[in-house]
Image (cartoon, rainbow, N blue to C red):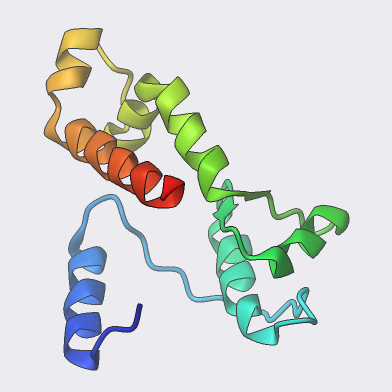
Length: 128
């Protein structure tokens, strides 16, 4: 899916204004993926930001599983969805920066409901 530059600018602006989003600018190019060098920008950003994972189904990233340093964890979209389905409290904690007080409050939290809705839609799309 391609976006027009006007839409891309708006999406980027909204992301950067979100309190849960931080901007990182890599200061080193690791060049760990040789089969598709354009993918390296995502790896460099993940390393710079100390990301837990890169979520992708792109097979070019599988080489990262064999590289011991710098360690970059790769999970598939399906693994990502399963991780969130299996542990909604961890989602609440990541989004809100604090432990979920109880199931009812976590369930009512709009950001959690949006995440569930998005993950359900994504899962349906991937299943078709």
